[in-house]
Amino acid sequence: MSDDALATWCLIRQEVDWSSAAEVDLTPVHPAVDGLAAWFNGPVRLRNADRADRLLAAMTESRAAAACGEPLTPALLANWQKLVLGVEEVHLRRSDAYAKGGRERYGLTPHTWQDFAAYLRQSADPSLPLPARAARAYLDIAFFHPYSDGNARLALLVLAHVLDREGIRLDEVEPLQTTRYADDPDGALDLAALITILIHTTHNRSTTQCERNPAGADR
Image (cartoon, rainbow, N blue to C red; front, side):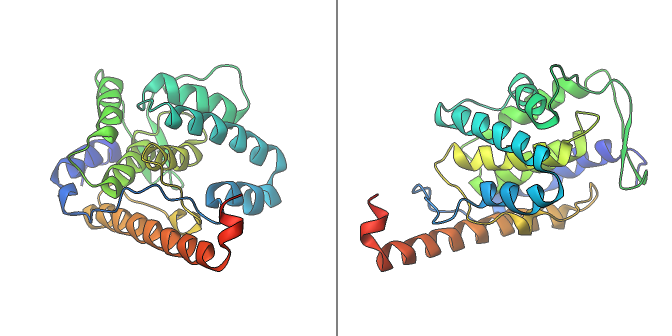
């Protein structure tokens, strides 16, 4: 395997049969519990209240963009990342980056950010199942590693945005908090499968809640 994890990911990304991921019902899913907000207000807030507030602000912006049908672009992500990090300016990295204790290196070439922008646009490709698009976008952020800090947080926001554009929100996101590797095509499809399961379980729990409390569902 190349020691450049980003180059490895770009090859793996082309080899994965994303179309094999399960389709999901694109009926809007309104969870009984807002899983993303609950994650930020729960485990994240316990560790760092300021970080939680910044993530909630970025979540609000990402959801507003989703409601307008805005596609993912580097400029849109930069606006979210400024909120995530609590800074006035952010810049795409200008040199190689490292993660996983320095074991994974993400290279940089003259066409890295052109490729990044093109891959972000593919998150809106209707020819692929929604879970595959969300998983692939999440992994793109993880392995392009566009910023010096906060990439894992941004990846979760991006995944949620891809779902939210289709009117789907999850009632839990904790299962997504798992280390991913650039050279793992099976893991990439496993992430898509996990997203499918989370969508189904959110829908089922939401439906059950509405059946138990129809009056509350109308509020």
